[in-house]
Amino acid sequence: MSDIVDHSRRQFLSFAGKAGLTTFVAQAVGINLGMVDIVRAQTGKRGVEPFRFAIISDSHLYSMPDHKFDQQLADAVAQVNAMTPLPDFVLYGGDVAQNGTEDQLVKGSKILKDLKMPLKIIPGEHDWYLDMGDAWRGLFGDETWSFNHKGVHFIGLNSILVRDFWTGAGMTPLERMTVMEMLESPIPGPWGVHEKQLEWLANDVKDLAPDTPIVVFTHSPLWDYYPRWNFQTSDAPEIREILSKFDNVMSYHGHVHQTLFNRIGNMSSVAALSTSWPWPYPPVELAFPETRMNRADPSIATDGMGTQIIDLSGSFEGLVQYQPFEDSLTPFMRDGFKV
View 1 (cartoon, helix red, strand yellow):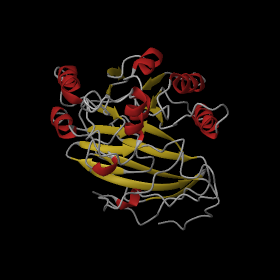
View 2 (cartoon, rainbow, N blue to C red):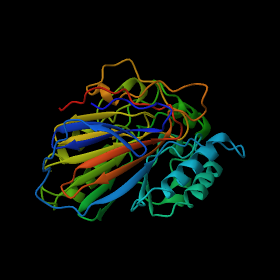
View 3 (cartoon, rainbow, N blue to C red):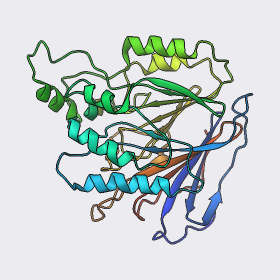
View 4 (cartoon, rainbow, N blue to C red):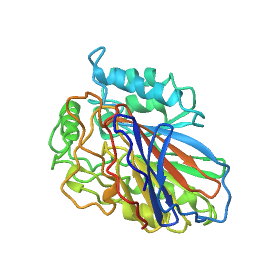
């Protein structure tokens, strides 16, 4: 592998998931550090018109004016608007707000309106449980959706639904929201998409051919990463079963605020950086440890945060590039690997 260049240069952690084979590439702006064991493999019979999309996620905006997270979301929008070429559209991975209040969601909506390209969005738990999604729907529309773009079928699901724990306990909306804000709260139980969305998903894809390229977008991971922090989706096995007929499925999610990759069966899962703060990695062994980014530097306010671009090739190969706000997000670099 090429020698590592000066880490003061902004760097990207990139990878391409290709038919069960994964290649990690470390790059600096304008400098290719060497592509290791590049794999060129067809993931499906159907061709895709190559295109790019971007992901912004987890802004956690507060109600006070001029909070630092406001500027960080604005910086993310500016970063995406400055990409060359521009993405065809942006996916937002949930948690626009911190406490689910309408003013927080309105603030986020106004900042996101500065994007030069269309936006598709799904909710996070911080957006939802103050009013059960009323303000979110009023601003952003349906939380479950699908569309086709240049040969790829995109699906968005609301993965943060829980069973009613508040009515029997006599909780106020604010108490319900407070419970859902806690990372390790034992009260709500596991999140999921639940029966209606599973039925919707099955109907949405029932007439699609197996070689249709699929991208599914959720707030929480579609695998059991760390259920204690709800880094999971309870009915992910059912989702994966519904999508198991397809040659290859790409899953993108927010919530974990860190770089992360996993693959189960035909589904490759990729996490998004946040624009608010980086979570630490939970105490579990990762199947793909080379995705783990360095610990964020606490002396740099926006270290460990940023946006991501996905370039889809004609054979439905996805190259994901993490774009950090600060220079010190340097990936842990090895000699590359295949899985």
